Each structure stands twice: as C-alpha cells, then as structure tokens.
Image (cartoon, rainbow, N blue to C red):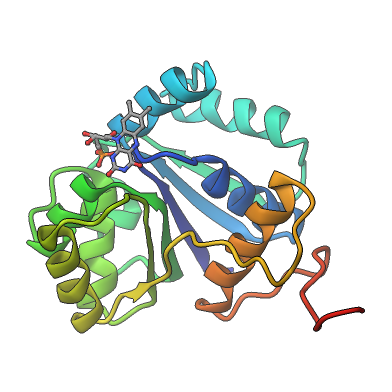
Length: 202
Ligand SMILES: Cc1cc2nc3c(=O)[nH]c(=O)nc-3n(C[C@H](O)[C@H](O)[C@H](O)COP(=O)(O)O)c2cc1C
C-alpha cells in the first residue's frame, strides 16, 4: 500500500499532526512520519513532551501515546537524507505538512532542501504528487504570503489550520478534527470513524 507522508514541523499546534497520524493508523493506512528538528523543541516547550529521535523508539512512543496498534508507522530522523522517501522513485499517495513553520515553508518555496521534510516536499512537487501544506503563523508577513503564493503556483495545496464556528465546536478535539478532516479532504482521504458536519440542526 502506498504510504502517506506526515511531516510535523516546529510550529504551534503539533496536536494537528498527531491526530492526523492517529486517524490514518486507526484506518489501517501506512504512515511515513518525519518530525523536524524544530518540532522536538516545540514539543518540549509547548507540551513538556520528550519525543525520542531514534526511529524505533519513536514508533513505540507514538503507538503508546496514540493508543493505536493498527496500520503501519515508519518514523524517520529529520536529517536522514538516505531514507527511501527522499527519492522520487519511492511512490507515495502524497504528503501533508501539519503544522508547517514559516522556516520550513520558506525553504521549500526556495527549493533549499536542508532536512528530510524539505527534500521530501521538493520530491512531491517535482513528481506532481499531492503536497498539502498547513502553514501556522499569525499575522503573515509579505514574505510568508509570497512564499505561500509560490508554493500554490508550484502545485501545493495550502490548507491553513483555521477552524469553523458554524460547526458549533464544544471541545478542542472538535476543532482539531474539523481541521484535520479538511486537510485530508485535499488528499482525497476519508475516515470512517469521524463525524462530518452535515448542516445546521442535525
Ligand atoms: C513554542 C514555540 C512555538 C513556535 N510556533 C511557531 C509557529 O507557530 N510558526 C512558526 O513559523 N514558527 C514557530 N516557532 C519557531 C520555529 O520553531 C523556528 O523558526 C524553527 O527554527 C522552525 O524549524 P523547522 O522549520 O525546521 O521546524 C515556534 C517556536 C517555539 C519554541
């Protein structure tokens, strides 16, 4: 089965990336997961989480944290340039970067692939495969907007993590799920175990 690459970078709200991985695994998908160097720092400072960098230890960590045994999960080091997913000959269904920092966004927009996430995004663009980017910053500077514009023109889907209020969310988890479902709509992936908004008063 072709994998879906999930990249979590050093932007706020890594819970969005985490929920993405959980839903994919719960739905028996194959996930290639990369955390940027910045993501480990944000996890520590925003959530007091020490995520292991070593791939096998990280898989054990996520399976325990996300309480999911199904699906297939491959974790990669942020600087593993020899990973299969760094090559265009390794086929995937697509890649989702959530949340995407302005640093990673800018480097992808300029073709400046320093880490595995940036290289993998570069590959998805050159191979015309789906690349979904969820940029997290506010406010955006003109440089951020121009980088987003450049990536959209190059074929990426830009899906910012903006919640909707018409769904009348009751919890943070409701907000997270709304955003994650919209991300995967862009990839054409559906989840059986998640409620969708079907209109008011239903
Ligand atoms: C707690 C915390 C939250 C951050 N939130 C954001 C953010 O929302 N957006 C952003 O672009 N950078 C954010 N940063 C800064 C990035 O982590 C920093 O620029 C880092 O170098 C990005 O690295 P990466 O792109 O390799 O993940 C945050 C940093 C910290 C410590």
